Length: 413
Ligand code: PMP
Image 1 (cartoon, protein in one colour):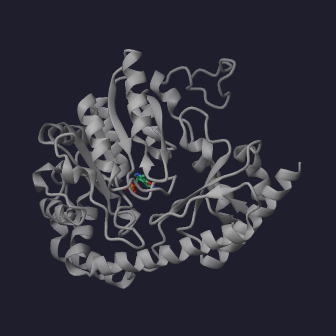
Image 2 (tube, protein in one colour; image 1 turned 90 degrees about the vertical axis):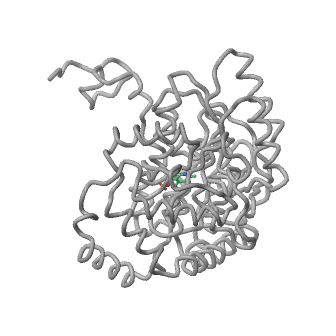
């Protein structure tokens, strides 16, 4: 063991620092992770985390199904399984995706350990260091972490109220191509965006697909919130209209429970084969037990009724947050009204740095995620993500009241 002093500028606490692979330097704790310990103190209203609120799940039903699974199919459920995932579940996944207009064959579905692992596997099979991934501005912090750990360059493209802007996407593609770098894919969250809360409009979807098709850029469509729209039926997926150029990612984390860690990728045939090989190398196989438990829940329970009651709960919380923002936020702040999902994106007046302000907010017993967490390039200082999924409507209002107080003080400084 080398206990010599660490290289200046590197942590002195980690004596292994000189032995890590170069890419490991890109793995740093996300700002959200660092927040978890403070935000979980009971006196703090956390508008920070994006944990689904599963308190409405019928635990007795789930418990019964799990018990039955062990009693009746334990020998299979507790055994290794296929690297691609349990066949019956892959069929059910195709039925779930049909709700978004997707026609797919179960052979082209690969089950993953949450959709997070699907982001990892796709990046693993496509990206060399220095390859470019185009992401919306802002983008999901967990995906940015994956891209960074594979030493990809992230290039952001602006959104507006209708999601990713076609002109911004065109400009991003042109500037990367002019610099001689390779674009591997566009990573997009079309529905109820994490963190921006916006949804790509139906009119815009064909244009985004056409731009990518013409430029030879694959689309990675990440859609964990697609069934959590508050008012409209589910939007038609990008994958529904483009089978060869889109890899679609889905998850049961928000429609059922994240603890099972079951997500999936739907990919063109050849890509699917590589994904299975990558999955086998990473885990041998996704967990049989979780997959069979999810499958039995989908088969034996009114899961769509449950999703409907999740939607109603989240809608009530969205309303509580938007009403509180309207009533309490100081002038100069703006926000969007999301049509589904978990998140509101709040922009504060120029001059306020939401990351620098966070310790003062935590002292005032409210937490949020600073906007910079969702950019690879340091932008986002005057924004923050507010989650309405977890706290009760009363706590949400109290959290917004505390946050408004901190912002008012900040504006007077
Ligand atoms: N993508 C997005 C946009 C997310 O918000 C999340 C979870 N917060 C994930 C992927 C990962 O979800 P899971 O691995 O639980 O399916």
